[in-house]
Each structure stands twice: as structure tokens, then as C-alpha cells.
Image (cartoon, rainbow, N blue to C red):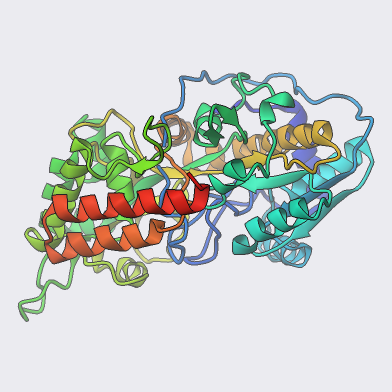
Length: 473
């Protein structure tokens, strides 16, 4: 979905920026390790550098959605009840610090909930109570409140609290309060958080995973860049391998490569699966929840990666976040990042560019993984109608913030390409038992040269077992 930028929301953003921050619009810069997956300030693409919790960002393909110019806001003029209770992943103290830090830099701070809280209260009155907790504490907090019958009107939907929220009936069918067919909403998010035919979340924001590369190193070595290949229509696994091999080398003659073509987290396989058109987990199977690890596309992806690690050796064996320092020091030619964080997250002396992920043999143009999040309305909400309005306002504000921020920094062409990628994100939630066991089974099988069919089958069984534990079926 390409974003619709809203005149009303833009006015609100300008008012908020003058009141809270002043200065020029923020540029979404992030330091490696500074962001939570899916939970960063609106208008800022999360960084993979320093975060490995949200690696499965790949699912159902979104429907075709048209971009539009400025449209009138769909927000009502008044609300009978404007009181809300929201569980969110940033405390008020952390938000205030973010505002002050950005103000000192002459930039805007913007957060999907905290910024909207101010605008919502100003427009509708009432009180929005935000319960700020850590990223990993959201699910426990929400379920505890619901089990105790306490009011909770909004909660974040992300890859690790689903399918639990849906399976445990913690959330309501959101289509009771939101028109999920409105093209303002990302179909991919609605679909990703639909279980048993019931949509539990909506959203209108996404961060595609892209290739981030050291343009200076490419120029010095006389190698065609990923973006050049992409613009030729020839950015595939084959050309990705070719480039990786050209970049890789033993510069000190000790028999061990000290420059690699590519490196990232051990979950890179989820992104490669996405470029071949599939996700890790299949929630739509008639036989129950299973993985896609034994499909022909997965066999293609796993074979490609295993060869890259053990035969071609242009991919660095994952070692935690070592890829971050290696990329910053020029020892790594390519890595992955989320959205425009690819351009800003690394503080380097060389030029950085980005390109879409390389296309797999069974994939379609623009297929990629990415981060998708949304909002859900818990069953103990006392004001679901107001919650639905808050959700809409939050994304209208975010779209307006990005309208004035990203086009200015990156240009219309790059923003349009990033928006196109958002339409093709493959994503499935990973909030089931045994997921990380299966992740290790695949990772170790890839780097140790275990037959693909062996580790893929073992990981598939772990996913099935974990789904049974989590979902009780």
C-alpha cells in the first residue's frame, strides 16, 4: 500500500512539532541497537543492528492498493467517549527523553502512541492513559489485565504476541469497529493477524528488509552495485552471489577471509525465504499450523544459503551482532536493514546505499521480508469505538510525518520504491513455542553442512509441536 498523506494530519503534526520539539523535521536516524522491532517512533524505520528478536518478518502478500494524493481525514469531529487505556512499549519517561534529545539536535520526535495521545486529547478531550512497558512485557501485561477484567482499550499487534492473542481470545474481531476493506489499511497486516477467519488487527505502516551496502567499497573494487543490477532488472540470487564472491577476500594472506560479501543475523534464512515467495510458518494449512521448511522454495533457499556459508564462503558465519562492527569498519560489503534505516543507522566514513532484496528463482519482483505491526482491541475494552478512532489518527499522523520527512531526505523515487516493497512483504507471526528451537536447527544445519532435508524436516516437526503447545490443538 502506498500511503495517503492527509492534509488534516499534516496540520496536526506541524502543531505538535511547534509545541513539543521545534526545529526542523527529524530524519529518523537510528544508532545500531537503539530500536525495538516494530516499536520505534513512528516515521523511523527500525534498525536490525543490535536487535534479533523480530527476525521473522515475512507473510501473506498484501493486496494491490492504490496510492492517493491528499484526501480528507476520515476522523469524526467529536467522540461521545474519549477516555482510553493503552498498553505500549515506551514509557512516558523514555518518550520525554526522546523529545528532549531530538530537540537538542534540532529535530522532531514522533511516536505512534505518545504523539497521538497529545493530538487525540486536544481534539476530543478525555484522557488517554498509556501504560508504558518494555517490549517483551507487553503480552504479559495485556493478558494479565484481560484475565483480571481490567480495562484495556488498545494493544500492539506484532510478530511475537500472535497467534497467542487470537488463539486465547484476548482480542476482539476488529472488523466490528474498523472497516478492514478501506484501502487506507495494509491488507498484509490484516491478513497476517487473521486467525480462524477472524481479523484481530489493522495497521498502515511497514518496514521492508532491504540490502544495505558499502558504496565506497563497491566503487573502489570496480563492482557493479546492487541498485545498478536492480535497475537493470537483474538483481537475483545469482547476481547477489556473484557480487558477494567479488567482494570476499583474504587481504592479509593468512588463509582466512577477512572481508566478506554479506553478513547478518542467523535468521537471514527467513528473509531469503521471503524473496522466494514464502514465509516460515503456515497458519492457513487445513492440517493445522506447520512450517514451510519442507517446500520446494525452502529447499531452494536453504541450499543457496548453505552453499554461501560452506562452499562459496562469501557469507560471514553469523556471530551475534559482529556484522555491525564489520560493516562499519569496511570488512563487510553488504548487510540487511529495515527500510530507510539502511541509510542512517551506521555511522561510517564511507557512502552507504540500499537496494531491494535479490529475487529468488520462485519469487516475484519486490518480494521481501519486513516488519509489520498493528493495533488490536482487547476484549475488556470499554471504548472500542474510541480505540478505532485513535488507531486511524495515529497512522494519519505517521503518514503526514513521513510525507514531509522522507521525501525531503531521500527523494520521491526512493520513497516510491520503498512503498512498493511494503506491498510485497512476506510476514507471519512467530509467537509460538519451539520457534527459536527450530531457528537454531535451521541455522546450525546451514553452517554445518547437514543435509537440507534432514534439518528442514526436524525444524518442521518442532514448529508443529510448538503450535500444539501454544494453541492447544
